[in-house]
Amino acid sequence: MSVSLYSAEESSSMPKRAKIGVPLVLGFSDEDKVGIIQPNDDALVVMLRIDGYDVKRVIIDQGSAVDIMYPNLYRGLNLKPKNLIAYSSPLVSFEGKMVIPKGQIRLPVQTGTDVVEVDFIVVDVFSPYTAIMGRRWLHTLGAVSSTLHQKMKYPSGDQVLEIVRNQTAARQCLVMAIQHWLEAETSTIVDNGL
Image 1 (cartoon, one colour):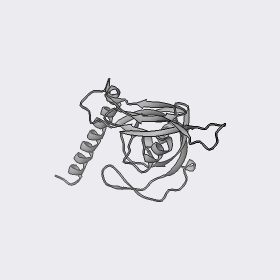
Image 2 (cartoon, rainbow, N blue to C red; image 1 turned 180 degrees about the horizontal axis):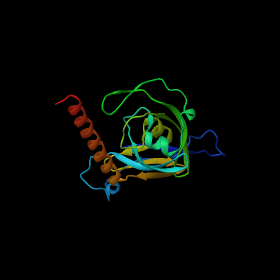
Image 3 (cartoon, rainbow, N blue to C red; image 1 turned 90 degrees about the horizontal axis):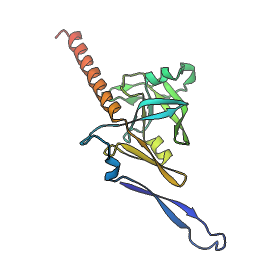
Image 4 (cartoon, one colour; image 1 turned 90 degrees about the vertical axis):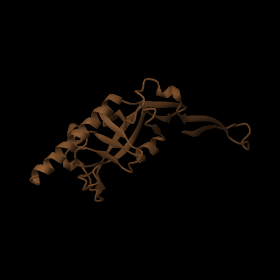
């Protein structure tokens, strides 16, 4: 997967000449898989700087149309209900259930020296992740992610920077999700008297 971006240089002496582009390629190769436990089907879980804090267990999800914040991060950032603005559209959780958001909050997310203001939808449901960074954030940053290569690349100035995975955290999150599901199933069986 490759996406080409161009930084144009204009010639001041010949204003009618076409722009000369130097390609800045965002792509992945086999070299990007070095150090990754293979084969892998892990989610891309990283650490990001959100609102000035290093936040672990952030999942990069190209399938998510919104950026989500879960209760652990909300409380960890000492946010209060008064910090939220209304958000009325319901969402669908991983379990396929309808979720009514608590609200929305705009916070800075820093990658390297780049800062993107992100509108997080705050939900009060279980998740092994602290946040989901979806397409809006990826597109604003101009980023391309790969779960196969367990990293994300994005243009910054005239260079390509990358955010690498925490494969151990991804696997721990999977275990936490399975444990939560098993506990919920056990609780349902007990509640139904089976």
